[in-house]
Amino acid sequence: MEDLMIITSYFPPEIGAASNRIYHLADGLKSSYNIHVVTPLPNYPTGKIFKPYKGKFKLKSVENGIAVSRLWLYASKSKNKFLRFFAMLSYSISLILFFIWNKIPSKVIIQSPPLLVAFTCIFFLKSKKRKVILNVSDLWPSAGFELGALKKNFSYKLLKRLEAYNYRNANLILGQSNEILAHIENITGKPKLFLYRNYPNIDFKDLKDNSSDSKILKVVYAGLLGVAQGILRLCENLNYDNIELHIYGSGSEEMDLKLFIDANKQLPVFFYGKVDRETLHKELLKYDLAIIPLLNRIYGSVPSKIFEYAKLGLPMLYFGGGEGETIISENELGWIAKVGNYDHLNAVITSIDKTDITLDIKKEVQEMAHKSFDFDLQLSKLKKEL
Image 1 (tube, one colour):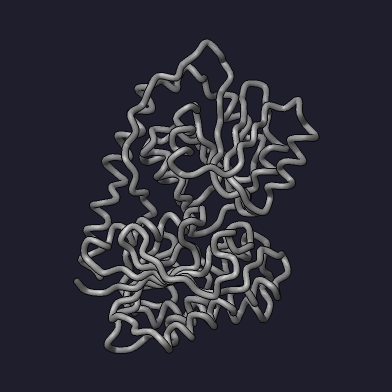
Image 2 (cartoon, helix red, strand yellow):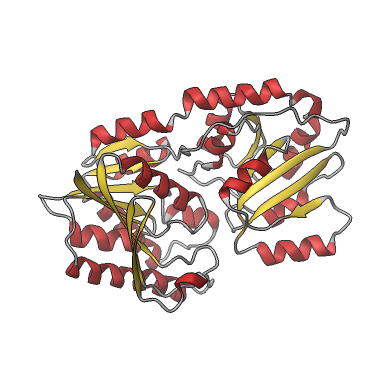
């Protein structure tokens, strides 16, 4: 079989959408290619090298039939921009050394962002004999500006130049949303574009009737507790008259969230921390409704939770704006609240009657996912483009 390399900043055992997306991509392609994943020593989202990997400079392994090379980086989740930049730079340096001492196949998939890492890979690997595929999951730096993490200064302009360079020098670009592809097409018409959604490769679960006499709506959030998700602010602004909020995950807001819960013990907010994915899927089946929030509408962003929850038959309350709203509406997957408008969010929640979320409704959500979010069909189309 032909060799194919995937270069990413995120890979299991790290958690999150990026890690899951790349793993499923690698796992799906391994029947057609000899897959070699190159990634840092695991550190996300804690900003610290995970215990089993501490003290190692690099590590090679075979994981579920996938060759994995883990490289050193300076791990940090600091808010200091210099330290964050140094963390990306350290991984870029490790990649350059890896490129010097290892044979690189004729096809390479590169995850972006981080832009600097993607730039390093494209700059050193582009050639007429090699096909460079850029997998774009977020529009950086514009997403950083929308989140308030970046200002339109010299650094921002430099990142915009890196972004344009990456797009113009790729042979094929995979984008997880139509907005991402439209943005890239405005910059350059050179590479071929392919819509590659973050469909999870998970089994459809058998749904059970969890109805009860209680009128309390059990709402769940599962995922990263970061700035973009705004879970702490969500907790502060929810009306808890007829709901419980159950939270799974970890991230930069975790400590603040715990402090909020300790200070507001009268509120029905329950935090369970990070659990493995298989356990999480079983837990999610207990709830009536999943909430998917974003602190601000981010152009190009489509939370992968939409596709995962749909396969689990879990109706959704979407609170993030953008293309995600269209997907929820067109596929009849749940309810929509105006992003950033907590009064409207609470009004929507109040309008939801728990008795309307029946087993049949959940089966309809799952059936829609079966028809519209087919991982194998999408992967089959991708293989023809590679």
